[in-house]
Length: 270
Ligand SMILES: Nc1ncnc2c1ncn2[C@@H]1O[C@H](COP(=O)(O)OP(=O)(O)O)[C@@H](O)[C@H]1O
Ligand SMILES: [Mg+2]
Image 1 (tube, protein in one colour):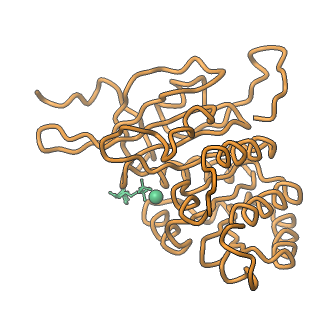
Image 2: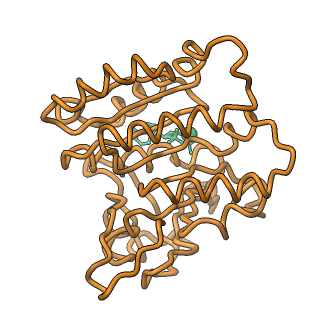
């Protein structure tokens, strides 16, 4: 978070995750402008949880950016349409890395009355990267796009899906140091940032280089738990700065009413 001192508790604005039961367990949401690690094993709905949070921000009229580096934007959108998100309430714009095209899209976003979900995937980014703007520069390319969208159409939130995919694209010489710089540059941007981290199956670490959790302002963990041959998703807040957050482990469910975090009501039969 860009370090600004608040004068009272109420000054800290919240960004709800839009998960019923969980937002209430963290004073209404994560602090705005903070960097939040969403860690989970494969299939734990990390992408869905992040999309769900920024979708709601777009529904409130905000502009948000979702960088999908693992799956294509078509695959992501198909998943979200199948989950029942209403794309009449928000506008969706796809951007690549070409500054001239981004400029045109920004004009369109500014004219629009609805909030915008701006999407970019590896395909759209690659298609517009010219010549030898090499793979080592991926991080710079992404940062430039995020900064342009922040400056020109005031995006309020960013999702990077996932850090692991970004690492694969990045030519690290000194990963821990470079990740430290990366997190710092995010914080300078004044955005609520969700960084998705694919956790190993044994849950032994939250981030690949084991620095992501202490560099983040918050860590939300989602895990698959197998009890009596029934697998449920469980969610908990492992860390959340500037928040009186519950340490309870909740069952995460998705239904007609959206995401819900349940506690106690759905104990498994032992
Ligand atoms: N309509 C739906 N309702 C509930 N769960 C769904 C629905 N559609 C897909 N899923 C679940 O979402 C999971 C994938 O979610 P996703 O957010 O892509 O996970 P992750 O990003 O953690 O890999 C699938 O394993 C599937 O079980
Ligand atoms: Mg995913």
